[in-house]
Image (cartoon, rainbow, N blue to C red; front, side):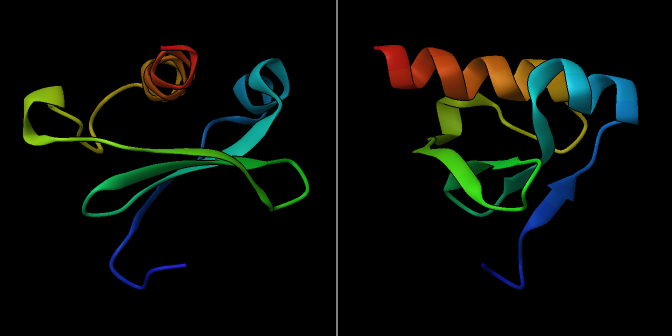
Length: 70
């Protein structure tokens, strides 16, 4: 994992809803971290996606899941 990544950790109730303990945002990639601490999914993103650490946790999870579905 990158030392230059931002970790978004949700409140416990939200972690249980999504089944995730964190979202890791690096320079070009978003990773979903499951409750066991392992990467469960990751996608690359571009400038036009407007990804930032200020986005709500649920929006980041939805972005990754939609990107994987397409």
